[in-house]
Length: 551
Image (tube, rainbow, N blue to C red; front, side, top):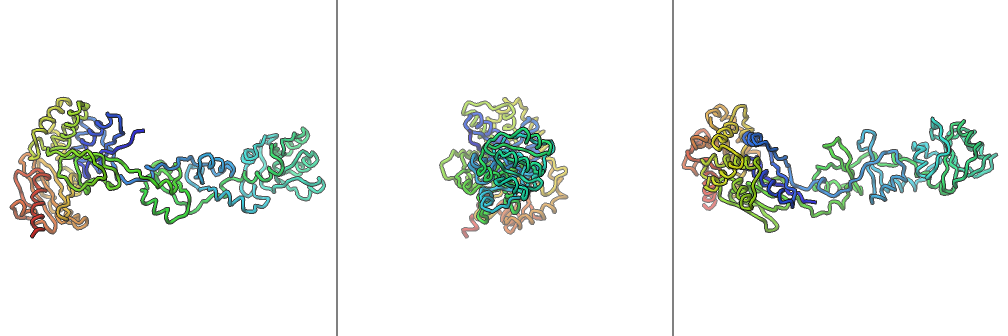
């Protein structure tokens, strides 16, 4: 079985992050060694949606965390049972599957209880009276299966088993004092005793030792509506085994059940188990009508299993998936600064100063003699155009241009025409809310122990945001307080003028303006020739914060 590896871009994914993950997953899957799954850590922006729809590529699935959940464990995949099955059948199933309990479901296939070995043993130890079969609602089928019995006669309308359980081991003249209507009788082949019992309107007669039943007795039983079973067991064994036909509903645990779902994190499961004393716990799939899928025990949690991931377009923990510290990082493909992702083993780390991670992915494909599919070539080309702003960004390199030309040729793409369509679709601000604008391309940086949040919005019409500016500033101030950002920046980038308006809030907001030789005017300043967050914004802020710390 191939191991699963998740190809993960950064939070608040942009086009490069999504497209790089899709392309690298296709490359890895072609090797046949792993099952590579591209995932995303949030909603896609309008530009990315346009790209994927344009080339007919399905978006990656959303991944909330890489922490180990119940679904990742090799718990016992056991089918639940009906509450009607006998104690004997339940024990057989437990022994067959090496289990100590079974989940029980109702007629709607919902969990109704748990039956354990302890429940059944406790039932045997209890001194049950001779009315237990009726009280427990025991069926003829359960009795037949438990005693390996053969049906001699059975009426169309079976009498209810509500009476006492009796063994006929006395003279017939004494029997009449004990037998009542609907009783269950265990007997040998004494015809006189059998006839007397049947005439008392019992519900069931069990003949032991596989003894032949007289035709006259069978005829009387048919007339009286009495069921006759023949078991190969002797009378002692029969009387000992018959209570095992009691349905598990009579002994199972029905209340205060502790249940886990497939999505529950193992850390949470451990905490719950530490506070309870059950040996096994039912597992349900809450995405499938709460269907019971198995049982989990403490020993299932003793595992060194870690999810395996490959990071693309980032190498900073704050930008990565929740639970990254608990998984195994196999590779990192990125074009940003080297940050704070730690690994326990040496890994393949490819970091190049190019304009797009998709440029690096394209290079890897071509270096290994691989030709991407037309669709993947298209999304990689689109990501390069997006991240370099069609080479207007200072992060652009000659390598970006070379790889873009090769990919565009495979995808049969008119670069200039497609770029205009993509930018127009992606930068439209019609109907956008302040929340959407700050979320669509946001990254968190940690610089000199300070948390810095930088959102970037590309547009062809920056004036359309003038009426929204005060709302944006209010929301930015709120987020700064809630999430502990000492600086929160919104870069409103004009693609064609190749300039950005920097809207800044936070306790150190004046330092940002100072880093660019500017002063704040209504919490913003304008900087020409600034398009790159990575290359033109983070470095000067890093320098000024570093110098401030050294003073």
